[in-house]
Length: 223
Image (cartoon, rainbow, N blue to C red; front, side, top):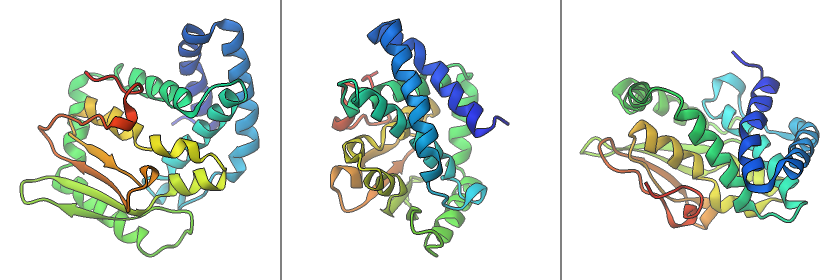
């Protein structure tokens, strides 16, 4: 298993060709060097929400990378949407190197009875509020087999507020849409705290096309 630092360097390597394509070699290198320096500064501030016991701890680690990239790009005149677009392309590109049958199998397992049991257990643990910076959420099941993760508190949005990068909040659902499309999980992620809704909801349904919300237009291609 890759260490967190190796995972971060992998993220930068995947981002490089995207940045070079869009902004040229010199500026891409400058952005990446600045991102690396910013992440070293911000890494100790990434919240510990339970370590390996919390399924969403890697989400917080990755959002440390996103904040670092955004700040690096913002210092050079780019907006939050530009950084999020790079992150989407990285995730989409990495996932597309995985065999489609395997991705769909993982998606099916996550929405299967064992997957639902695991998520329900994680959700009950979040409701104990052991970590102030954590998510607080519950699972809802539909009569027709759908599964929803409903968040009353979002660790990602708390992190953006703490880092004073609220401009990232409207795009907090980009990764859910990205993986859902390739894993066949049929998510509707249009309801988020980052868009001013009362809660975040990830509403999954196998066999349904993944919705691309309006806030992700120009980031996630409609295909």
